[in-house]
Length: 429
Ligand code: SER
Image (cartoon, rainbow, N blue to C red):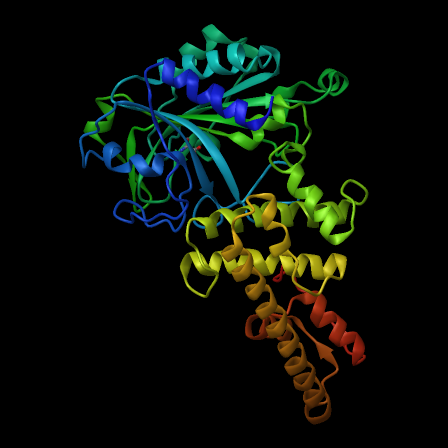
């Protein structure tokens, strides 16, 4: 089942259930009135004013597919991307909302029917997690959800977790509430027999993964305090979200989101441009995954108007561009622009994005070369005038922060001048 069909099934299902279908909002968070996030980080972002009772909604049942970015703020996945098989800086979230119309009872039943009847995911592969309560914040066990789930699924497949996993917040000063999560076990029969999937839920396992989060929005969080909210408590406020890339991985029988029809064409293009092969070497695979993830985020952000520069969203996208280049420089020894060549895989008509991206890449290599020269002179000078023998943590950090030189480049310079170098964990690569 290709990703378009998967999306259509979702939208048609909720249309039939009388939900109003909304379009994906721009990926940039343009309306900072209710959240100062730079990028949209979940489908609920465009409906905040209704949840916060600032505006009367026209529709009480809503669904959409929203492009989301999670590289800043509370929900930040950047450092995991590429190192596992299913986290991304950008993903599409399939979500449905109830604005005072239905409770978690209906939300859970809708989710269950969709994944077991329409997408035909086997019940045996499904695990559900429920909020067990939190004493410190005086929050109760989510018994309501438990009572619904135990009618739908074997009790052995239900697990209970606390604040970290089953209490969702957009950021630290906004809506929040307990959640039920649906997790799917995609391991092969033998591995399932060896270890029951329930022991792998929320354990960062690559093959037992969270798919759908069903949040019962009940509270407001302010200064780390969870506050009861009459308006939310007295009504039925539901916020759900499911990652399209993960759903594709499950329904397309892949062991990684990177092998789905969303990412594989990008990977093929990278293989072609860089004359490398995916699936032969673990380190190279990480680099290819990082590039394919980042270029997708870069492209869709630029399509929505972000220009790489040193401010806000522009800075984040610049960081992703530089990160892609530095990984390919270190592990593939590529020292010239190539990201712009991947863009036609998304859409051929984006000449402006291609031009801007190429220029940004050229600028980076220009700065990098210049800074390497400056640092070499700086080091030579220190050897002569201060008898420098060692590049220590402090100096590494200084060179990184001042000249943007990564550890692996500083190490090359140290080798060239026969200097000792003490590694630091402070710098990523
Ligand atoms: N907002 C919740 C999440 O992002 C559910 O959509 O997980």
